[in-house]
Image 1 (cartoon, rainbow, N blue to C red):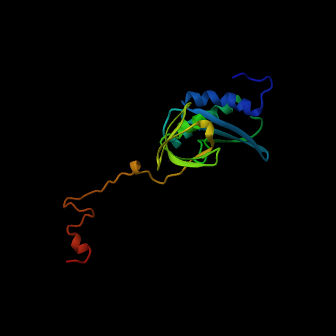
Image 2: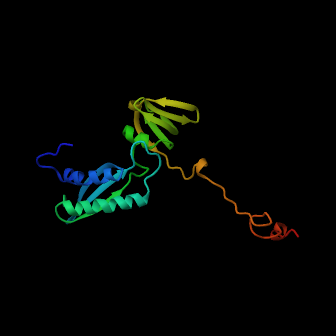
Image 3: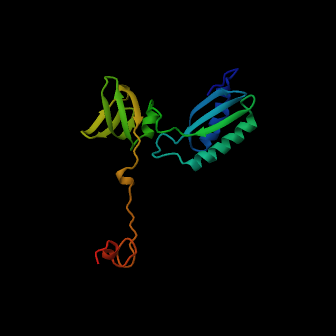
Length: 187
């Protein structure tokens, strides 16, 4: 990255934060500065790498936030008082780049294509050749440049994530009573 002769506040923050984020094995997704009265708000968005599947844990965000805070305190890239916010992209982030789609693999996505059609399906793969989805109608290949808008659909539970763990007691029933008929008044 070439540093301009007179870097903007965002460029100064980026130069301080990027090495910290990359050293943590993460990607610096965005740096945003806004004025908030006498202070500034510095928003840093970090994410897992392109090939990672899953979500960034709050513990990891907390660790990298402390490291970013220490680096910001040492370098002082923002003039005056500021509030630092470090987060990961939410599920409502639009999928706009190949990196975003690669991170959304295994997730349910809704794609709006430039021709106005909409596809809903599980994103199986994303690469330079396009996107592979499993839809209700079967597998579908979509060229990345055909996508006008993409979003991850929030799933409250996924079938393969649900685990039934029923604790049986010594007599084999689930509630710990010896006779289930008595529980229901069927003696």
